[in-house]
Amino acid sequence: MAIVPTDLLDRIRTLERQVRELMGSANTTPALNRIDGEVVIGKDGRLRVKVTDDKDLVHMGRVQPDRGPDTPQQGLMVRRDDGPMALTVRTAEPDRLETQQVQIFDWYGNVVVADDAARRGLARPYIPYPLPRPVDAARWESTGNTDWTTLYSGPAISQHPRLYARIAVQGPAGAEVRLLVDGIQVGPVGGPGADLEFRESLAAGFSATVAFEIQAKVAAAGDTVRCRPLALYGVQS
Image (tube, rainbow, N blue to C red; front, side, top):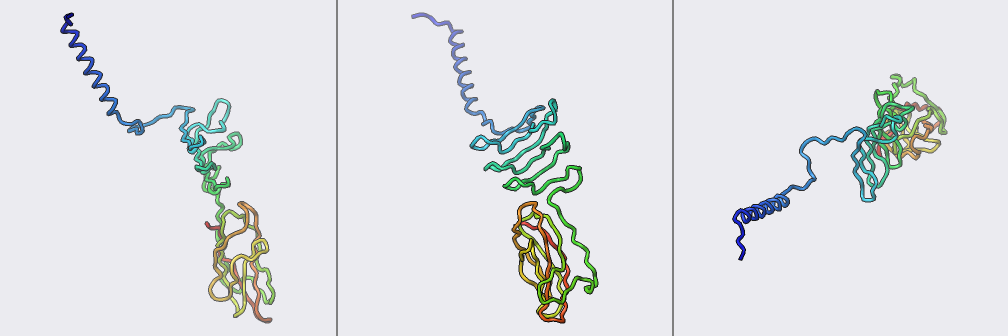
């Protein structure tokens, strides 16, 4: 039987020990799904999170369109998991509008919230200021007609699915006021006493121009009803 040198056996035992240590280390290595520290994505790089059909859910870093041939645009785009865009931080027209806007979209792609491209304040939604009203009710618009008569009218831009209205009314019993949107009554009819106040769905497309009318009438000839709009707001559903 051949004699195996002692130093060779020692080397084999050392190799066996090292292999066992390597295998044990591989089995105890934590999963690479956590990073304690900073992650840096270099210039022109991007981070993309995809849904099951390989479409982007979150896109951070370089976004399209570029600002120029040699000038990439850095931004953020977030989509709903069924595809439509939900939020962006970018400019869609860098040649015309340099400043990036923060925009939030509804499911149909309408911009429902955005800051202003002039770098000051809010762009959407448009928020009206309540109009100051005369303190003297005698200066409110009035009618003595027993048929519906328009006392106030004017345009507005539809941006919300519902409408909040409040109208002050003064007059004898039986007098009535109502609000029309594009010639169709919205909400209930009101009368003297408490203000006419309601929230109702607004049957108009997003950003459509609508016409408001406030009408009033009295129950008997010789009576007079006065009214004054206090608030017209678009509100959430």
